[in-house]
Image 1 (cartoon, rainbow, N blue to C red):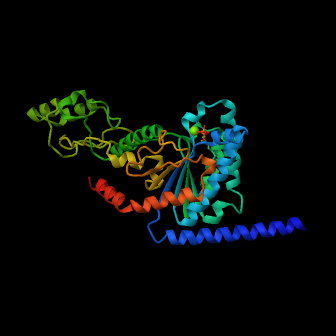
Image 2: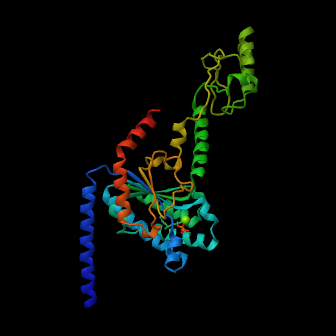
Image 3: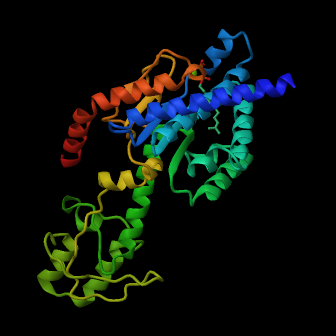
Length: 348
Ligand code: FPP
Ligand code: MG
């Protein structure tokens, strides 16, 4: 009976605390609220050590802290939250710790799919960001299942970076940009791409899977005199008519006059950005790293050029409401300055 009474009291107290927190958030919301907050969770093992308990306890406490902070963020009206849960470098930790973290991840991802949790409560769409091929199959499948199950959620977004580093993300984005550029070029009817005028026509590599040599040969029959010489010697700097159309089976279908349409394939900034894993979210407005560390540890290097870093001394499992509130107040204080900077960067 006493237990029931105690339970009721703590329920009432919990309700009152939530009410106070929501009042506080209402006041804070008078100012601008960050659209995207990113967290580097750091200090779980130090926390465990401080408490004289096993490392794994630190990671479990870290997960609880993450759930509280997510709740606060979404209550406050933040739309995107990104967390650095496991970097590619973390695979170098002891096999036991890696296994423990993967098991924890699997358990928690499966938990996220159950009814009555934070995902359903706030209508969160979950993205797992990183080189997911590096994960064990059960974790990867669970992550894919969670993304599929939450794909239609619209109110908020959670990005969990696993098997992630910025270097890997950037390399992957450049590689994918090249692949899609190549595809784009192949789709262009009648366009022939050259590497550069100075390299000479004969030296060009096979582009569009169409050997330049084949075109030269096809053109030879149709061109005469100096026109042919120009083409074969690569002096078509500014001509623009179609030269050939490649059919799906790789043959030249049509050669009209054999003048060259030059199109130099180049990878632009926008191409790379489009292929980032993080392209599903705007850049973060605040980056918070616990444990007083100010290193970025290969996290969102591309996306944080104008993003302030807040690094409270608290270890990750100790991070709480007041750290978040302080970070948001600081963001509000520098909001105008940061907006001007961002605007300027977009214009440049
Ligand atoms: C950093 O502390 C924490 C990690 C590397 C792991 C964090 C992962 C979780 C809490 C699980 C998240 C799961 C989901 C599904 C989101 P540290 O180990 O670097 O501690 P230290 O800095 O004291 O050594
Ligand atoms: Mg650490």
